[in-house]
Picture 1 (cartoon, rainbow, N blue to C red):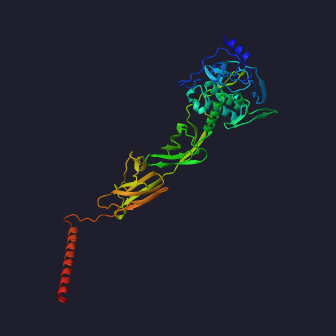
Picture 2: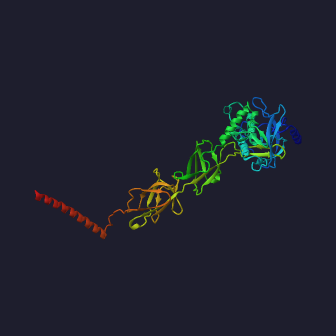
Picture 3: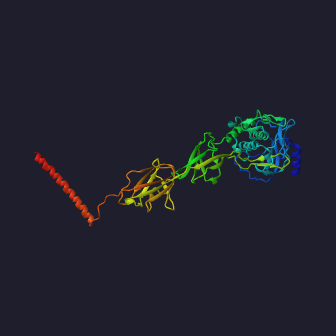
Amino acid sequence: MKRWKQLLAALLCLCLCSAPAAATSPPQPELEGEIAPLAWRPGEVVETWIGEAYTSMTGHAYGMQTFSFVRYYSDGTKEIKTSTQSSGYTDKKFYVGDVLAYCVESGKGFYGGDYTGSDSGTSNYLKLLTPQAQRGIMLAMLCGYNPAYPQGMPSAKEVGCAFNVDDFAFATQVIVWEYQSNLRTSPTKIGSYSYAGRTIGANNYVRWIEGYPAKNCYDWILKQMAQHETVPSFAGDQVHTMVYDVEQGKYTVTLTDTHNTGEDIVFPQTSGITVERNGNQYTFATSQSISNPVTLVSQKDVPAHTGGFLIWSNGVGQTLATGAQDPVYFTVKLTTQPTGSLDVTKTGKDGQGLSGVRLQLRDEQGNVVWWEVQKDGSYAACATGTGVDTITTDQNGKAKLWRLPYGAYTLEEVGTQSGYQLLTQPVSITVSGSHSVHLRNTPVFALPATGGWDIWMVGTGMALAVVWVAWSYHRRNQNGRKRT
């Protein structure tokens, strides 16, 4: 039975990725509901089938009677050829298993049967195409009809007319052929292609859908492809610096996408960097210090990216493609701003270190900096509320502060040893590297202990002071009387 179908397919399939008659075809993919990504892997062998004609919702069966195409050969050579089909010819759908596949080898006959899948990097046929063509084919299948994500199709209002799955899928197929034949070099650029004295006109494929819903779908898909190729404005070689945020306990930077792409982005989680989007603003964050800039190879986070793009071939007939894979990558370069440190020394009488002195550091906004106490007794700035908000000097009157974002701070004393006055004013400090500050406390005057020699000395002094005041007052009164 299988051989009979293959022989029938060989007789009926000529030139373009279609056939005038069909063997028994599997049902079309359902439009409603979630369809899981394809589970095929490179190297798997799957039976291929010829399906029914691409038929518009208007009842028109799409077909190209005369067209030119580029034939690529395994030795790297190529040529432009022309094919003329009989009246009433229609383009047929191809299936790998029960999944709609796209023709990526215009003009070659399809014979059905068992095909082997390979990924884009190992496909011998795909390697014959230009990088632009490879990228364009994958982009068309990503933004066009994807059987694994049919709910991603636009509405009739978005397209500008009513249409069905066949209209949308055939429009996708036409764009694939344009890239494969070197007519289209980008979603916005198409032109004729000449080689060895022969030329393929720019409208070689698109003219067969003019005036039908597939043309509206074609225009919409190309617009989506162009938008998808637009990457965030902050992508590229510029290095963006994340600054340590003591409130969050992380290095962060918020970048504005002036291109307004409006898509979340993804990159390897192993980077230790996260990103959150709010409109056209992207906030990158990490808890790790980065000494050398890192390059994040990123992509837009699109639901149609199934990661199952495969090229199917049996080495003889038409080459097919299934799945979807995003070919658009861009880079975001990030580093972290160096953080500073501050060595605090507290001394009292005779320059001895004062232990147990409590201090608070405030940033430019007046926020108290919080700290993680390290095993060595040093203080590392951390997220607010996650550590301690007070620094305490050690037995030598010292405290080491680090992981401080560059900027202006004030250091305030909130507690000191008994017998010493608190600093009357906070100390202003600007952190731009490694710094040190030496703070001296003034002893508070106190009465000597009761019963010692010192108390008699103090008492005698106070008594003499009282006598002096009384005598001065008496003399002043006596002088006054003599003058009267």
